[in-house]
Length: 371
Ligand code: 8OZ
Image (tube, protein in one colour):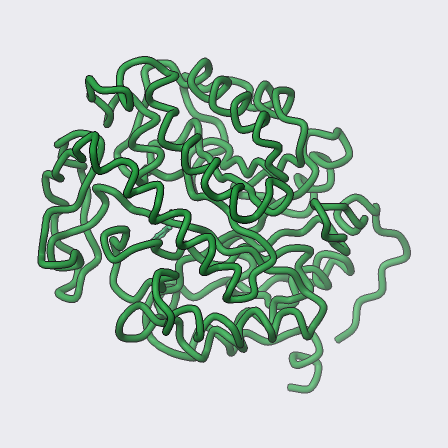
């Protein structure tokens, strides 16, 4: 099978400058938890092939990766806090670079979305405040209810920032091109931002300025290591994923983005609407307000297909489009979009956990031709 298309609008396939990197197109592989890591949070060797297969993306953002043992909230997710993990990431970044690709790492602390069975010494997960999330943790024993976390002491906050700094340094040693700070989806940094989860009375809670403090301290630490031109941030201002909410998200996120802009970050990655769900949510605001407050690149995500991606870029409502699920099942997604080829659907049963099946065996168009 071979499909030739006479004319393709160029938008997705135009090069774009991302800090010092020239991306060949505007198709980004969104960070995707695939839960294939080994003992001690060491990424699997299978990830070498998995990411290399997807190197034609303009940029790959590697899966959410815990910055410390305390930052872990799911079984089989990888880490970036020790030498064995750094060593295991090196052939992954090298394989992507060998194929001409670019790869950022997503730095992750889950906060309260964890379980004692996943924590060092079976301690309680930590959070801004001791408020139990609705939902389940994915542990060695399967799904179990989330627990009431322990509120972090003010004196511990510098240590959290330090975890990010060390992880950022480790990501450099591992050969990544940059890092994305995960401040979305109800994990630790998002828990500090929102007033449903942050009831603190110290300088990390209360006012918008105080709730944004941790994220901005983390942004300072990470840009100290990498320079702003190699650091992005992911936010999900309208999402309720992780049992999160804010009474007034527009001024909160406008402040956050204005302050991130002062740090000259290279991109702002915004999940529009509810994570993995509807793009329009009740009580939402126009997220273009955030684009206007930010001088770097605007990366849009959530449920994009080719027509929506093209019209969004054409209207200059984004500079980059991040695709998640389509990249699971279409390693050559860029080529398929370019020629209008059909996309394979991901198999839900092999999304998380397991081995090669449903991970590195989705075919390219070329491989389909030979079958
Ligand atoms: C799905 C399953 C586990 C983790 C996120 C890191 O939502 C995740 C995640 C998604 O950002």
